[in-house]
Length: 481
Length: 97
Image 1 (cartoon, rainbow over the protein chains, first blue to last red):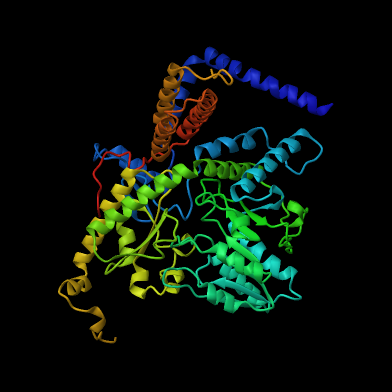
Image 2: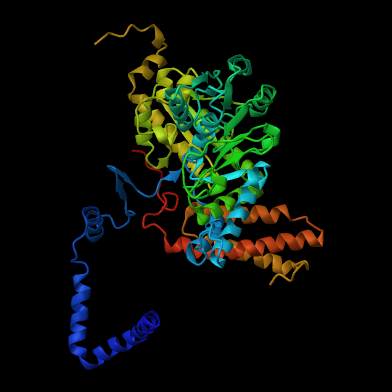
């Protein structure tokens, strides 16, 4: 009895409200108008937070009426939002992806695991459609896709899950020194548990040597993990060849394809990979969702990381986030449709950026293989320039010195050091990431700003002066302090 | 608007092209605005010499769907447009600190 009456009275309230307001103003017009004016005048008097107060202060003063409102963040004053060239850290959500996601944030909010009503069924249909879209992008079967919270979780499940499952016989893991932190950290964790890990070195171009891989394989090796496209330098590892070696030795091959999926054509059968990690937010999808591909034939088995409701065939318990998964599916489908367009556009812009910078500056070095690379990632080192100063000077360009995960530290990138890049050059690296939404004007602006900033910093540098005078810096005996 | 599998008239095609560009200009976000413009021009150029009526109809249908998405998303983007514009939208000379 109670609920209907409550809802009825609520509806009544809604209907009554405007009428009551009108009545109030009708009967006491003078008092209501004065209270209204008091209310409106009191709005600006409301105390602001400090940040807002600064902005408001600037607005009120009108000191520079012509200049646009500037932003101040972390002590850096910017005229506007910087142009974004950090696509390896994350990419903007494609409007088409958002369009696919929004219904699942509004009316279709069901739990995809609910089996007893329409809300559950429609969400489940959406999740399964997304699974198909993702599988199609990598040439897999939808049943081989497990949704995770991102590529990090997928990497964790792949490495720890496989090794834990086969721990009786398999005690050894092979990976590379240039992997993403989450792979390296999972390996470190396995080492603490008593497993052995071989970290393969890379050649100067960032690629691993197949002979070294063959030499590292042992009878008790369980899994080989090599990333497809490197997040910092963009080199593409020869996964198909590695897959061939792994098949021959009956090893599982895992590849982290977070930076590759949707950007370069991928087929899990051609690459002969058994596990693959994917991420949505690197392909213009939402953050917080990823997927793990797990081959069914020959079957790969893993131990689950999380205990719970047994979703995703028990491999990843926890409610599947329908809107995010739908977004990832849409992002993968769009990436597949747009790959040709994107590739052409990104290649053009990357060439424009590289030629623009190298035609105006000497001592610029491209890190990683020139030939085997994804073109949207340009990792450049600027000789005789201090990296942090350069990044600070490029405040109107959102770029990074390497991985976003390690961009807080002042240490040079471990990936560049694995390549054998000298310490000083590793310190001055900048990663330019170009994507679907980057424009020619942005690239031109980034070139102009970079050239300007590097020139300026070099003019201040005594090292640059010495180099210009023909002094070999390596011959200098630096005084010890 | 799109009559099933029937090929659209040249006027309809031109109208779709113009509508897409019009929607593109409405985006508050610099990058999306430029992308929709570029992708529209590329898309129409790609099908410029298409003669198969079924292919033309399919491409037209696809374009109409994209226009609907663009219309909805232009509204969404503008609802949440940041107060601070992209520096690419500010007509100022590149400054270097």
